[in-house]
Length: 105
Image (tube, rainbow, N blue to C red; front, top):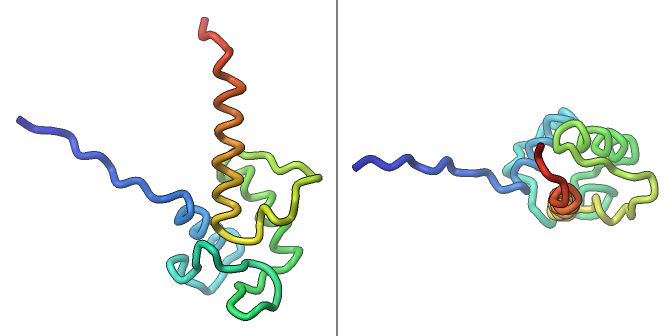
């Protein structure tokens, strides 16, 4: 008996890393970015992104993941890859919950 193999899904954190590197055209391997590594600022070990990069990421998150980032969002939501992935998960869960009350006609 043959069974179809499940495709190995990438973790959302890995997708976010690939998105960051591609969107900002960084000369970095996505695998070299830690989930908890600081993305912004001049801290030791930080990726060193700036406010222009933050704006580009915010715009890109909508295009790439379908999540809208409101103007009043807490900047802490974008400090690490994990924070971005958690934000995307929360927003997607809220969208699913919002549409759960609708019926397909």
